Length: 81
Length: 141
Image (cartoon, rainbow over all chains, first blue to last red; front, top):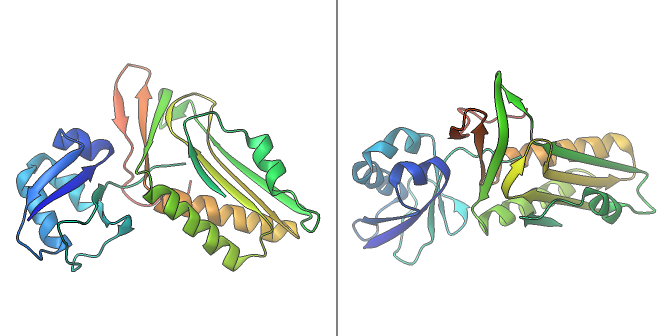
């Protein structure tokens, strides 16, 4: 399945896009998506390790499974305030 | 009440919104754009959010704060876009019956906002360079 990952802040700059398309096996987990993102965007790897992934606007754990209709976002360490 | 806005934050109006007859204490926190970070001169900050999730997390923080202290009213507003030095980036206003709980509730709300809400700032340094701020660990400064 094709997943579209929203990118923010420095992650967007490193990936060179605000929407990263990643091809991944059906039923893949958040952890597997991390691996696929790091492979597709090597410059992102270091920041990715410190970043959260959100699925449908909620922080997601590594073992959570994904579906093609999920809204997915890569959230680097936040710095609001 | 939570809000993301590109407009200047009217913190006077926000403060008035949380005032209540049964609350003898009102605390207002303002975060403003500081001119110096680690010895480097900042000319401006750019703020961006993951809309939807940012408001959702702010609303959860309001509910969490209300569950811990006897909050009468509270409001959290975060500004987005390009802010010059001295401008208000975030405002948290809380009313409670007494001051101890009002201070504690306001402190909790801003601390959690800085920890959980998907908003990011980009430094615009005086030498013309820019840099996204991605803390190594959660900051409560």
